Length: 459
Image 1 (cartoon, one colour):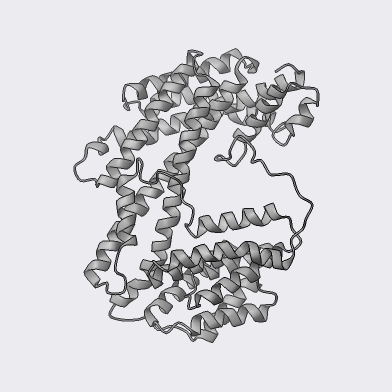
Image 2: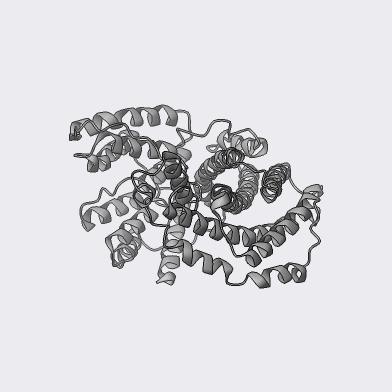
């Protein structure tokens, strides 16, 4: 950095990232101990999918350690960090896609379960349930919260719409983009395609062969003629994937936070000035943990780690106070219009890496130059039609129960299309009354009551 402001920003960013990295790296060591110190990855009792997850975790762990050791020696380059981050980001996208896919079958299996139960719980009438749902929505003080509650209910309702009716609802809801520019609606449709699983990351099977097999079992099941044994097998497949994805997404988030901080430390480089004692304490802790992990040595006790952590108490908070003066800055404005382009780019990356969006891309998405033409209602409908056509084609090869699950998901993601509370009430009542499958309807109501109870408990 050439400017004084730039050096101050990079110093504050580097100090904060280093202190946070040291603490997170230590916690990461302790969590990895649960996997590797106990030899879980070699346990014959774990499933192939669990083994696959642990193998992937170990590969990422080894590469992270190599980058950390390289940083301590002054050898880890920004290019290496960028490459590693991109690969972690790609894998995180796959994990998110798997979560969406298996979430769809969570809806399906829950609504099939009642088919194999001997007794059905006694439920309130449709009118009584609708009254409770309306009370739940209206009791929210802010309109944003009311809309969020409506979306939560829509995601659990039974769906009995024809495809044409559902597609007309999509077009109706997207008329909110009338008067907007083309790119805004294109982005909204792109997001809906992801929710409908029409666009999945490439190479879903790569490094996730077992998860992919589990997903295929759910996709290829004969739900119409499913017996209880078959249902229990599918439920087991789903539960295994669910647990693995929960662990995988948690581990990936911890890894990404550390990668972001290490990236900032590399970017800050020579501009990162730090108190010599604190720097020595941080380096000593990080070096000790890295060397142990490099040797697969997870024998460090809590007492040994605490000796190194105690001197660092309050350091992260102190450095965050320094960084907080810069975190809302606009890199170009802060550095000045005459600052070198490289300095502006570096500062912008640091701001994104230290933001709360840990998976944010470092290069802002390029938007084409606006044409200055705002969309008419007819133009909105024309742009929506290809999306509806893709859904129509995709749904022809899917079982009804899966299509209904997709409908519920999409309804909960669409812009709000109810103009009055009477419209909402009529819609909720229509969904419940049109479902003649008592088991499915009972499950939907149970899920809705559970959600309302949880939200009420938070108030």
